[in-house]
Image (cartoon, rainbow, N blue to C red):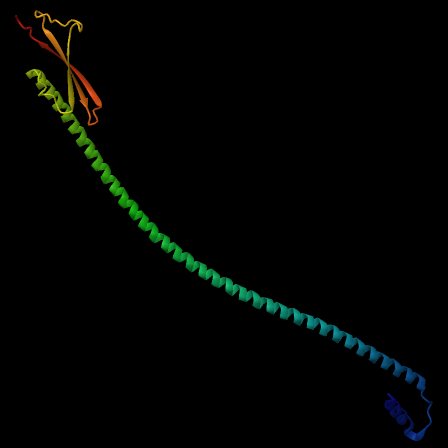
Length: 215
């Protein structure tokens, strides 16, 4: 600030070397002090603004770095989850395929068992019908044998079918030991059908009338 003032004074003194009124240096010094104070204030304001912006920028940078780190961590987790998802999908596909194969095998076994069951039912029905026919034939044969035995007398027990036991009962007074020769004797024959353990299954009663004997 001093050199401009000196130059100003020198330029004012040179032309014609005429004396001019002197410049009030106090005003100039006051102006200089104001300029210096203003410059210092501007510098302080600039430094404060710079520091504030630097701190804000540093905070922003730190936040960006943190966000970048978080983004990288999330990306790693995402890739891990995607890999797990792919592995589970593959496992699910394999499990479905295995269950489909097992289900097909079970269905085939069920079909075979149903076919066998149908055959067994058909055979059972056939055997049942055959047994009914044989039982009917047996009953008819027993009736025919019984009728035949009644026709031929059957007193000697030779016509009794196998599996039968016969018992003879004479009608009349049991306490009377003397038979009346004038009256015919009625012989009642009881046929009992027994099994292998001698258990009575069926009991039949037949009456046979004997001719009276003359003296």
